Amino acid sequence: MWIFAIIAAVIIVPVLWYIGTMNRFRQLEVKVEEAESGIDVALTKRFDVLTKLVGSVKGYAKHEAETFENVVKWRQGLPKNLSLQEKQEFMGKMDAVQSGINVAVEAYPDLKAEKLFSNLQSSIADVEEHLQAARRIYNSNVSTINSMIVTFPSSVVAGMINMSKKEFFEAETAKRTDVEMNF
Figure 1 (cartoon, rainbow, N blue to C red):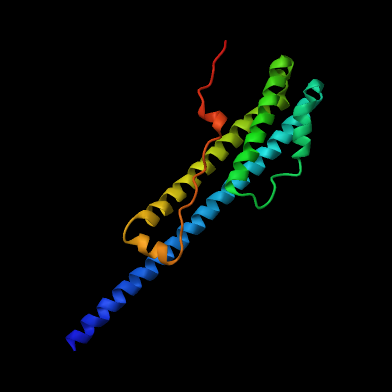
Figure 2 (tube, rainbow, N blue to C red):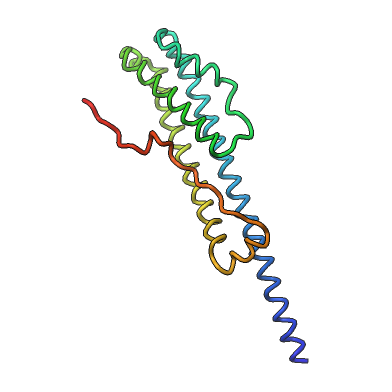
């Protein structure tokens, strides 16, 4: 009788551990997807704020036509079903647009006095903070699931269910260099 109970325990405990570990992987996968969705929301919000900013600045800075044409071209919104790499490229393009807007502001200092423009600048700062937070949450979730994937004994379950490491959201190359300050 005792031998039967020990044999049953030896079989049941590993099966329960396997199921628990597999469920944890699935939960973490959902967390990663949720965090990626958070980045999409922040990018969409950023896009909306930038297009509104362009609308208010456009009347003052007609010579910045190329910058504004790019925004109009992207006014359709964040393309659907982009890979993480494509989202990073899209963000790089939006950074270039924002940089063009900043050049327009420097060329037209009277724009800084506009209340609407000031409010939109504050909105941009807020949106950038949300986007940064969304990236941190995503990378935190990716770090957690990747740690489980490479750590024994959970790596055994990861291999059995074909779980592979997720990609981290990385900074654009231009943002990795030191910022030059000219006064």
